[in-house]
Picture 1 (cartoon, rainbow, N blue to C red):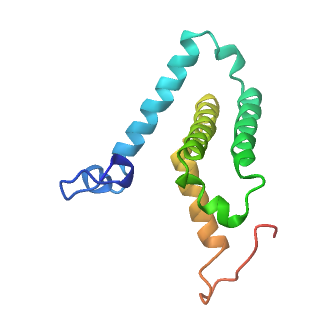
Picture 2: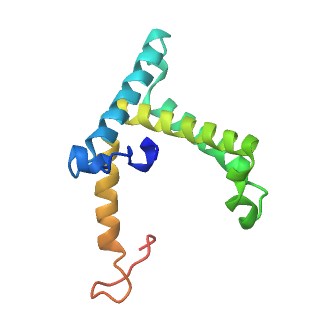
Picture 3: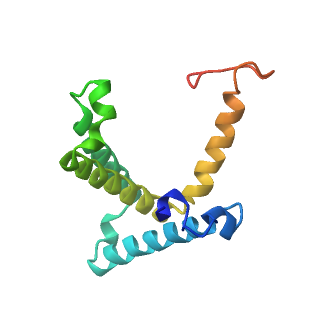
Length: 141
């Protein structure tokens, strides 16, 4: 197994070693954020890394990811990772989107993992499992 699947071959996973919070992944994410910040600092790019500029760059990179899928059928899009050249493009664009998102969060002081965990919790309350006692609402409500 590789690191992204959570296993190391020793019968444990990241969550087991680091507790329920998945500390190794948190640590790796922090390391990547530091590398991105150091990369920008070494090139004198910090003045350009404003929230607005990073949000725009994030949108552009997300659009480049969408472009790969633009004219594909749902069936073709489900198989996009089967072709090495397309898989490489998808992975590159995903990396670009994540890089700008992490930089955006760093500049604004948003803990991306805490924000995601809180959002999932809110969505679990807003959209309960069908058949449960809580009302089911749509995101437009």
